[in-house]
Amino acid sequence: MKKLLLSGLFVFALLLAAVLLWFYLFSTTPYIGEQTPVRIVIAAGSNLRQVSAELHSRDVIISPGMFEALARIKGNARSIKFGTYEFNEALSPLDVLDRLQRGLVRLQPFTVPEGRTLFETTRIIAATGLANEKELLKKITDPDFIDHLGLSGNSLEGFLFPDTYFFSRAATAASILEKMVERYRQVFAEEVQLAKQPSQLNEQKVVTLASLVEAETGKADERPLIAGVFLLRLEKGMRLECDPTVVYGQLLLDLSFNKRLRRRHLLHDTPYNTYRNYGLPPGPICSPGRLAIRAVLQPVKTDFLFFVSRNDGSHKFSRTLREHNRAVNTYQRARKTRKR
Image 1: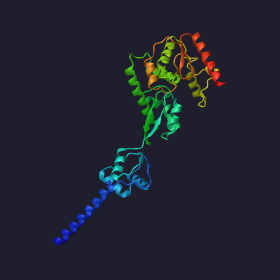
Image 2 (image 1 turned 90 degrees about the vertical axis):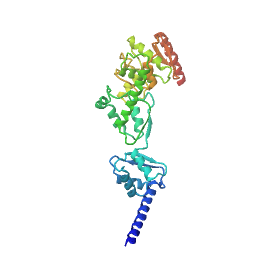
Image 3 (image 1 turned 180 degrees about the vertical axis):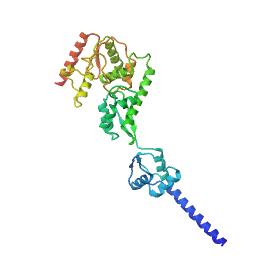
Image 4 (image 1 turned 30 degrees about the vertical axis):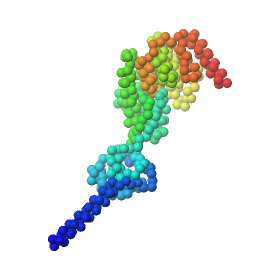
C-alpha cells in the first residue's frame, strides 16, 4: 500500500513537472504565425478574453486559453493598455504580455511645419487618422477648452506649436491639442529665459507678432530685423501693412481663398486687415516657430520702416517711403517680367 502511494505521488510529481515544463516552454518560446508584421488595435473596454482571442486570430499567440492563464498568474489580467500594437518579430507569450502591460503601442507621427494656420494643422493631423478635422476644429474654437488650457482668444491659433509629434491610436483631439500647447509653453518659456531683457509686449502680443514675422519670411537671419521693423512701426503709430494678415482675414471669410491678394482685398475692412487698422491684429495668423518667437523677444534695433520681397525669399529694407516705393517698383516690375 505504501509503495502504491509512493508510486502515485511519483507519477503525480512527474505529471506536474511535465505540465509546468510545458507551461514554461509555452510562456517563453517565441511564436508568430505566417502573418508578419501584424498590427492589432485593442479598443478601450476590451477584456482579457477578447484580447487573447484577437491575438490568436492574428497568429501572435498559439493558445488563447493558456495566454489568459499566464496573464492571471502574472497578475496582468486587468493591466493591459489599449492602443495600436505592431508585432514585427516572433515573441513569446511573456513578451507579448509585457508589451501589452507596458503599453508599448505603435505611435503615429505627424509634422506641422512653421507658419501653418490652424486649418492647415487640422488637415495634417486628420490625414493620420488620429482625429477628424471637424472634431479638432470644434476643440480649437471651444471657449471652455481654451480657458482650460489657460489661454484666451477665439481659438488656439498660434499656440499649436509646429513640431514633430508621436501619438498612439488611443489619442483624442483634446489630448493631441493639449500636447501641442504644452510644447508651445515649453519653447516660449525657454525663449523668455534667453531674452536679454523683458519684452514690452504681453505673451499674446508676442505670439501674434511672431506669427506675422513667420508668415513674412522663411529666412532665419531676416526674422529679427523684420520684427524690429514691425516694432518700430508700432512705436511710431504706423499701420503694419502686412499682406499675410489680410490673407488670413480673407481665409476666415472663405477657406477656399487662393491667397492671391488684389486691391479690393486691401480695401476690405476685416479685423485682420493691417492696411486699414492700426496696431496688431486680434490674434496670431499662424503657428510661429522657435526662431520667430525669438526674433520678437530679441529683435534687431533698426531705423528701417519698410521692406519688400525681392522675389527670391529675401527682402529689400528701406528707411523712407521714397526708397521703399522705388524698391517696390523695381521688384514688382522684375516679377511681372518673369511672368511674361
